[in-house]
Image 1 (spheres, helix red, strand yellow):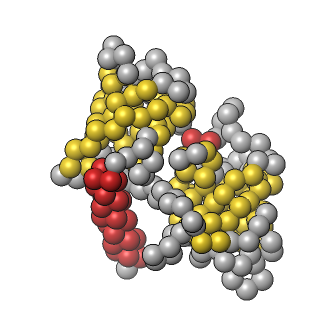
Image 2: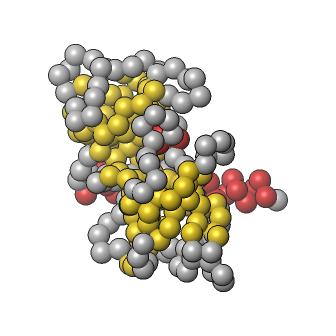
Length: 215
């Protein structure tokens, strides 16, 4: 990109922020300014538990048939909407040597059952990857980070059952009722394949909608 940070995708393209082991957040590239660039701040990172400038983490994007990873440092955060993070690369871009999970999808039905079997809730999927999911439930569950949860998710015509660990519990944003939960899990090959196919179908649908809205 002339005059900007080399190797980045196009402005407006999806970019993923790796903020924990097996946990990443879907964002998008908003702008490039000299050696730094800005991305949309994920909703689940806004609020009292938001990250602080100085935090270092990887970002990645997904050209065809590969993953491109760049280490970055968070150097600025807007304090008014639209919330954006300013990132400074701390190393060269590289081809990923390990799988980086792409997140996508949303709207599918989710059932959560606590590990003890004493509580359950119905919710809606916000997004999913081969290593984790984010969902909304309208009634809070007594869960904290590290708790085990059985999640049943209906992905198109397939039902998958996932034994997950709670990574984050947050109140739903914008005054909505309930909670947003982030779960991490290790998916077996057959389940991972179902998730990949679901995300691919979702991305194709998103591109078609974008083309239709632009025409």
